[in-house]
Figure 1 (cartoon, rainbow, N blue to C red):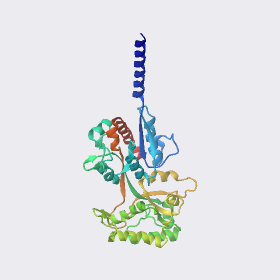
Figure 2: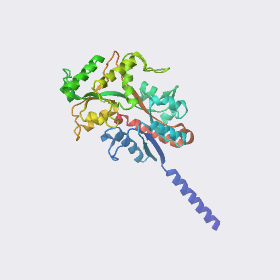
Figure 3: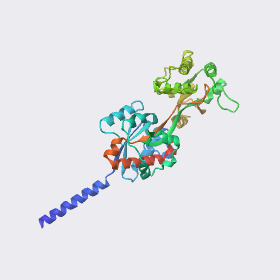
Figure 4: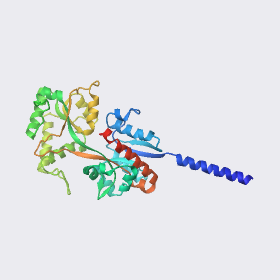
Length: 353
């Protein structure tokens, strides 16, 4: 009798443990940039700015009754990829990472990312047919897919229309008059300084990457590829033309290249520059600051990068979501959970846009 009772108790205990393990949530770690949103409760449809939008999308999934919880690992954009690679090398990668298209050859090329097959997309509920050819190309390396497309983003001209009106740089239809040649670019900058008393433009001059996006666009507008199989093609007539144009703005005091990285947006919002060259991702955030204390921006206008040379061109990139290869290889359950989260993010693509 004692043996029977003990055996029954052991079986009940084992059964309880099995039920407990089966009901335990899959815990995912998601690494991203985009900043941090202080409001942890704002609904997705009311979220403004990159950080709050993506945070609310992920929060809704994590709090849903789906057996999956998500911990976000937000990181500074400048150190993000170093941190990701360190975690991968250390054998403790996140389950999901956000990344740029231009990083795909590096990470997929060394086998650091999970291939996502047609069956993987289908099982997660992601309809591959929904993606444009450009979106698919953005997650493809050597004929295989390694992620879920998220967006296409470019550098734009964000304009304080009030300052353009003050400088008399307006078209008859009420749009700002934008330069269509290097000579006109400098002429408009001089007019802005003389009549409105502010810099013509600002951008993140303090870091090589962001300012090279501007130079890259100006090189491409001259019909020249800024990057070739031999490396960067800045030491060319087109490269020198672009660099000379931007340097002239600085030499003549028409831009302030000393504004630090953490202040250049505040510099524009404060009415110190008529244009800020910044990304698609700043449209919503810039519109949201209008009317706030200390913000001089009231009449806000956004335009594509003007064609300064002969051909239209602007710097652009894409974001995608990927899963480190170690996850699919070592934890199939976590891989499937990660794909479900990516399906949820994909379903909210227009909220992000």
